[in-house]
Length: 233
Image 1 (tube, one colour):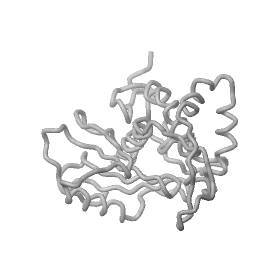
Image 2 (cartoon, rainbow, N blue to C red; image 1 turned 180 degrees about the horizontal axis):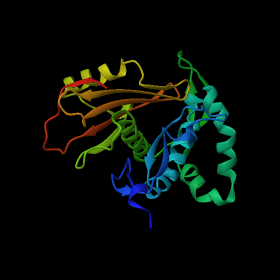
Image 3 (cartoon, rainbow, N blue to C red; image 1 turned 90 degrees about the vertical axis):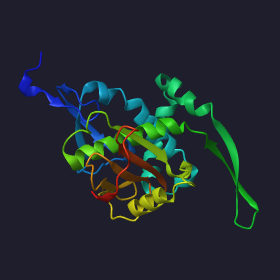
């Protein structure tokens, strides 16, 4: 039974528990040798270990992305990921990618085909789950406390955002995208953020992985509350 003095509040579930640490973003995104200044936040065992397969899925999905194939960090990760996918004990995990494998033709700007490559129709919800977690982790890192009870965290792939009826939302996102990074690991990950001017628990984050794949994350009040203006984190 842990002593009360050993208990701290988990970044993700907010419960008082004996905690370990979780990396933000997941350390599996970095080829070895990894940077010695990776961000960690306190996390309970259930929240940490329960998400490890999603972190692995995220890293694998991005490493198999043809558009990222020239990124040196991705090049460094691919041998490890390919070995893992070939392991018998990873058969179920590998099947998640084999089942959505397809061949796509690539084209020159002049319209002439020049290459065929394998592509994967990944589970975007699983990717967003990892980014939501990173959003909660960054909130903790820069606020030095978990998100207020009742608030929620969400994330969405940039290419899937649709705000045709809300130009003010696009303006906010553009403002976040143009900020200087709050966290930067060259070739692997950058994060930018805005905090509400009136509600410190409402934040917007722009996550970019391997210089090309971006997600927007947010910590938001219960739906009945109105959104507030933002200021720099």
